[in-house]
Image (cartoon, rainbow, N blue to C red; front, side, top):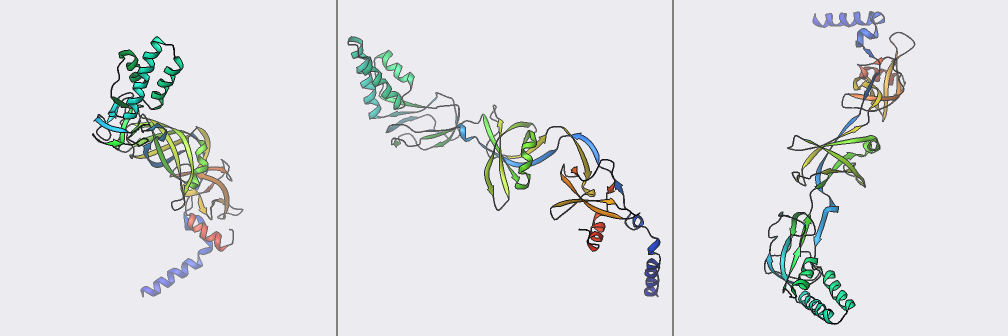
Length: 332
């Protein structure tokens, strides 16, 4: 009995099909593009890293032995001119004595060229100006030489301990200044063309509530083939040194304010790398697909550059049904 009733119901639908409208079947709703004044926003994700231009290696231009090590811990904060280590170097000691002898000789026999040469030798060896002036002022040579920090920063690498011997050119310390940091954002290659349109960048650091204003440093000329991503390098100020390398970030990129026509994502169908909307056809209940020039505005809508006018109506739902029907009828 149930089967018979079902068959009767289906037959009734078939017999009445001609008088049932498309709107009744699909409950189609139309919508027109909306004009807004806003700034498109795009979100990227990345991490903080050291600004490579703010890294200095401390490598002495002489051999020697470490007498006292002041920068004895990794990540110790140091100031420009601060003593990192006191060392003994026979080569530097000899150059100091030559300078002192030249200074004394010049006092009684004018020999400025010899004095200048002896001073330049010490400078080229990396002896600080204060230490050289101290020789002339005190007329005395200190057997030890200081290795000083060339800038404010942190000791990110230390290759010596107290009592260590080192050779000419050995990298003893790596000093890193964190007053500015890079933020390297991963962006999909499909978004690369959007980068020139973005004028404002805000960086939110994982675990911090305050957003940081960032400036574009460079779009790196390298693409990760496996991930299909490029790297956008941003620069942020970090005067308080409260941001460290390796922190996870979310980047909000915003373009300048402009007028846009937008449609909700429910009204736009992407198919074969093209965007379509369905407009009303010549007859009632007839809808046809039209190609539009569209790009993402946010996660809920598209910017419509062309293909639909502000006063035109398009279907806002049941796109999957219309898509199937269009394919059956060979419309695209």
